Image 1 (cartoon, rainbow, N blue to C red):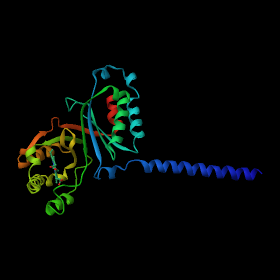
Image 2: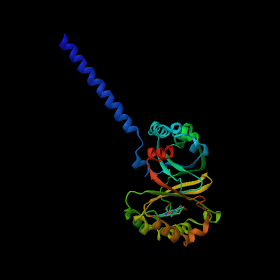
Image 3: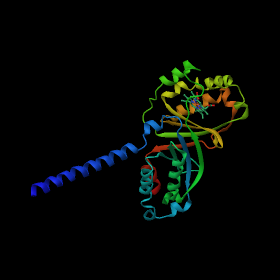
Image 4: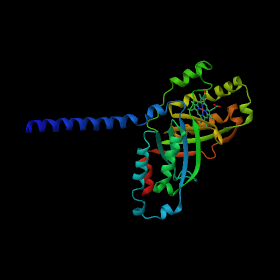
Length: 271
Ligand code: HEM
């Protein structure tokens, strides 16, 4: 009798352990795959900058305690639907203390996260100073078919600058003359843009979001690097290519931040 009870208990323990394992692995499976979502097309990106209200700094550390943990928990709650990156801009930007970059396969999921984030303590004490929305797309111009040599250059260059500490976001808008050029003319411009940039791929990581009709701009350009001087040189090189004549917005603002985990950004601001 005792033996049967023991066998039954062992059986239930195995079932519970299996179920727990199953729940755990399902949760792990359900989490957004960072490597994938950052590579794929058709992914929405929201970049939002925030400035902490003056009364945040007037609060006592005791009143602010737990704010970072609350954000971390909110991010974890949405981790099946969105990938959230956080950056500290305090001291580097006049209009913001931090910014978030949120990726999702459906824009509504990104919005759901933003709504919940704004309900956290630090979210309530933050003012949004900029919101940019864009979507990732396959290459338009420097494709294997249209520009094989440059495409090869693009694919073969690899970033070698070490774990990047800085991120820079530059919103870009083009004028009507740009959009009214023929596809061949724009291809030539895009090639003129790409030629001086390829050598910089060793020190700069780039990502492009298309934003026409989604935000009041055409592109959100996002870069990560360690070497800010190399980035400065890259941007100078791009100032003198013909494509630059078609920009009606370049930055305004350029958002420079340092890259940290969500926890570290909000713990710094909580202190
Ligand atoms: C490592 C540096 C860079 C490389 C290798 C690079 C390369 C490229 C390439 C290959 C394209 C064409 C994409 C396509 O075929 O659809 C492109 C587009 C673009 N790049 Fe860059 N780029 C770099 C830096 C920059 C910088 C510093 C800016 C300035 C904000 C910038 C702004 C843009 C914009 C706005 C487009 C979209 C153009 C369009 O589709 O009309 N890029 N870039």
